[in-house]
Length: 90
Image (cartoon, rainbow, N blue to C red; front, top):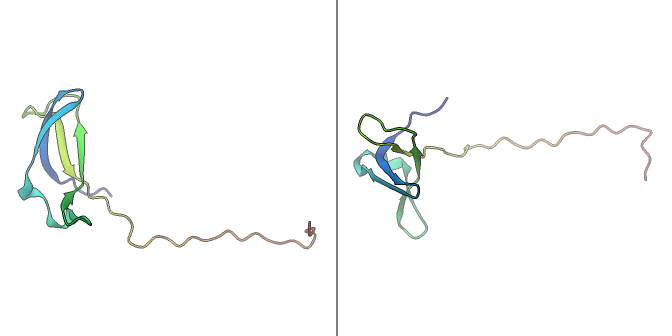
């Protein structure tokens, strides 16, 4: 089941290479703010560009990237190859 998206901003596509937007810092859940090795704070976001504007004139949405790797990876199981008695040693 997909998690609910956490919208933190929106914007407007100004040209093929320029998007203008804003992010509401108050809407960012603290558990998604990461501290880098340099001590700076980071937030991973997903930026989606839509084909048409919404009711507020925005055609860009910004959501928090909530993806987390699995905490417990499944153990790898090597397939067992049955040995037959007529196997040749070479």
